[in-house]
Length: 320
Ligand code: ACO
Image (tube, rainbow, N blue to C red):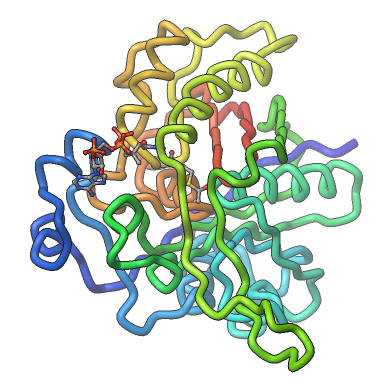
C-alpha cells in the first residue's frame, strides 16, 4: 500500500458575476431573503463558458500549483452532473485540451458529493499501485439546467470548477474516507435527462430542469453530515475539536452553522466562500480548497465533507 498526498489545487469561474440584486430584477426575491437563508450574495454564471472549459482551466491551474507536467497524470476523474455531453466524458474532452495523453479518464455522477466520491476512488487506486498521479476535477455549469423562473433553486446554484492532484507519496496525508448513499431520498433533488429522439416512445422528456425539496435536504444535511464527520474521525485518535479546518460543500451558511453546533465546534473553523460563489455542486469543495490553501500550515487537520442528490454524502480526513 502506498501513501497518498494532495499536491496541487486550482479553480476556475466564469467572468460574469450575478448579484442578488440582479436576480431581484427578474424574479420575486430579495437580497435580504437570499443572504439570511443561505449566506449567498453573488455568484458567477456562464455566458458561454462550458463545463469542459472550466474543468480545463481548473485542472491546468492545479497542475501549475503542484508543479506537475500533464504527461505525469495517469488518471483523470471529473465529477459533474452538468456535463457538456454524456459521450465523450468531460474527463476525456478536458484531458485532450490539457495535453494529458496517457491517462484513464472518466466522469462520475454524485452531485454535490462528487468531489469526495471521485477522491475516494483516486486515493484508493493510488494506494493499490494502479496509478501514480490522479487529477480530480469537480466542474459544473448549473445555470443551463436551472429553471430561471423557480426562485427556490435559481438563487442558490452557480457555475465553476475546482481541481486537485493526488500523488503517490512516502508521507501519507489521507487518514480516512467515509462515503454513503441512500436512494430512498432520490426524489428530493432531481435533474432528468432530455430524451427527444425515440419515435416509438410517446413519453419522452422534453423539458429538464433541476428540482429540489430544500426543506428535506436541509434536514438530511444537518442530520447526516455531523454523523459522517464523527464516522470519518472514528479510530483515528482525533476528535472533532482537534480539527483546524472544516471545508464543507458550500450549499448554505446556516447548514454549516448547524453542523458546527451539533459537533460543538467553533463555527469559525468552517471555511465559507458561498457568499461570492453560490452553490457550485461538485466544484464547491475544491474551489473552497483553492481559496483557503494559502492559510493551511503543515500539520493542520482538515475535514472535507460533501452532501447532495442521490442522496449521497461523504467526508475525507487529511493532515496537511
Ligand atoms: N426569495 C424569496 N422567497 C423565497 C425564495 C426566494 N428565492 N425561495 C423560496 N421562498 C419562499 C417560499 O416560497 C416560502 O414562502 P411561504 O412560506 O409563503 O410558502 C418561504 O420562502 C420559505 O421557503 P422554504 O423553502 O421553507 O425556505 P427555507 O428556509 O427552507 O430555505 C433553502 C430554503 C435555502 C433552499 C434551504 O431549505 C436549504 O438550504 N436547503 C438545503 C439545500 C442544499 O443544501 N442543497 C445541497 C445539495 S444540492 C445538490 O446536490 C445538487
